[in-house]
Image (cartoon, rainbow, N blue to C red; front, side, top):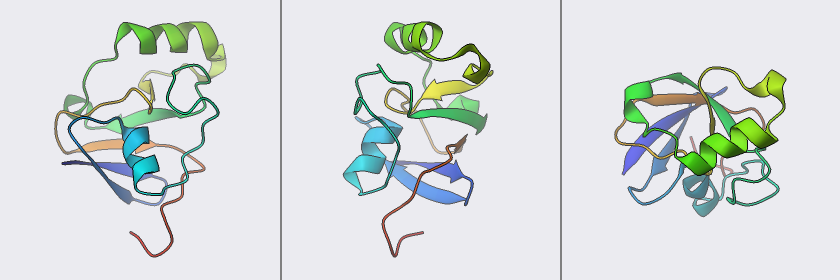
Length: 107
C-alpha cells in the first residue's frame, strides 16, 4: 500500500499497488466525483498533482488522450491528471481535488 495526501483537508488515502487513486477512494467508501466511473471519458475525476511527482507513474496514452480531447482547455493545467488512471509508485504524492469526502469517521 502507498499513501497519497488529498487537499484540501490534508486527507490521507491508502492506495493498493494494483489500483488507481480513484479506485482506492471508491473501494474505501469515499465520495470522489465522476460520471464515467473509471473509463477515462468524463474527466470529472481530474486532480492536480501539487507535490511528490516522483511518487506517481507517468500518464498512459489513454489518459493523455482523454485530457487532450475531452477536458476543457482552461482546466488543463501543468500537473493535471485523471484520478481514475493515476497510479502511484511510492508514498509522498499530494493531489488537489475539490468535492472529495472520506467516509464519516475517517481521517
